[in-house]
Amino acid sequence: MKYGFGIDVGGTTVKMGFFSEDGTLLHSWEIPTDCTENGRHILPDIAKAVQAHLAQTGIGHESVLGIGIGVPGPVNSRGIVNRCINLGWGVLDLKGELEALTGLPVQAGNDANVAALGECWKGGGQGKQDMVLATLGTGIGGGILVGGKMIHGVHGGGGEIGHLNISRTETVPCNCGNYGCAEQYGSATGIVRTAKRFLETCDAPSTLRELETLTAKAIFDAGKANDALALEILEQVFDDLGVFLACVCSVCDPEIIVLGGGVSKAGQILLDGVAAHFKKYMFHTGRNIAFALATLGNEAGIYGAFKMALDAI
Image 1: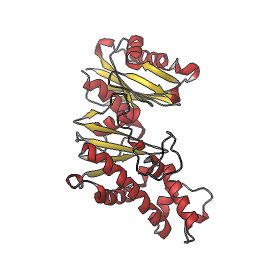
Image 2: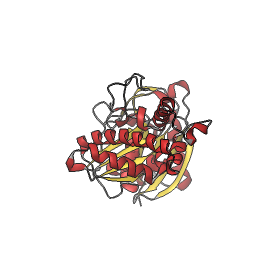
Image 3: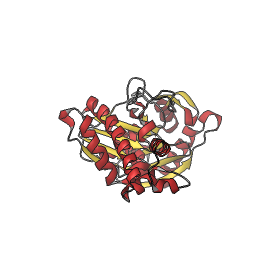
Image 4: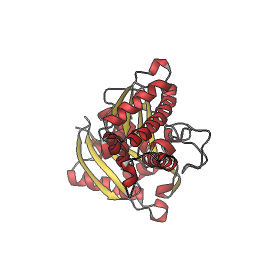
C-alpha cells in the first residue's frame, strides 16, 4: 500500500490530510500557520508534522508517493510561488524547499486551483474532466480544469477568475486595485453591496430594511420567503454571475460549473438563478453546461493537493 499527504495552507491554519493511494482520507488534522518572520517557519512546521505522522504510523518514506500542497497565492507549474501576501512570502521555490525539508516529492499549486482539482476528483464535479469552480465567499476564487489538469499559467495566475472585468463603469476599486471585477458583484461582499444600492435608491418595502446587519445569507433567506425587493436584488446578482461565468466558459468550454464558498449554501435558488441568466449570455454551444454545488467543503484543498501528488507519479 502506498500513501501520500495533501496540505492546504491558510493564513490561520494548515490543514493536513493523509491518504491511501486509492484516495481514501485516512486522517486529517490542523497545525497553526506561523506567519512571523515573513512566514519562514511555515514549511519547517509542515515538514515536522509530516515526519511526526510517519513516525507515529510506522510508515517509511519508501511507501509515500509524495506531498501535494496548495497555498494562497500564484504558483507556476514548476512550484515557484510569486508572493503569498497573507503568509509573508515573496518569491519562493515552494516545491524545492519542501522537498529538501522532507525528502519526499512535492507538487504545489494555488489553493483555489487545488480545491478545483479536489472537487473534480471527489466532489461536485466527480466524473468530469473539464470543469470550472467558482468559490463565492468574501471574494471570488476559482479554478479551471482542462482534461483533468489545472491551468497554472506562466506566472501562476491561471484561474484567477474572480478578477475578470464585467463592468467598464465601476468607480469603486476592487481589493486588487482594478475596477469592475466579478468579485465586486458576485461575492458575499458584492451581494451585500448590490443590496445596499437597491435599498438606497428605492423606497419599496422589504424585510431587509429591518435588519441591523445585512448579509448575503439574509438576502437569500428573504428571497426564499418571497420578499419582492430581495428577489429583485437576487435577479441582479444572478445576472452579474451569469455574465461572469459565460465569459469564463466561452474560453474553456467545460462540462460542468461547480459553485462553492459560503454563498453556495443558498442552494438550489442560486443554481437555478445563475443557470437561467448564464444561458442568456453563453455562446450557443455551451448553453447547457451543467451546474452543481461543491460538496467537499473545507476538505477540497487537501483532496486536490493529494491528487496533484498522485498525478505526478
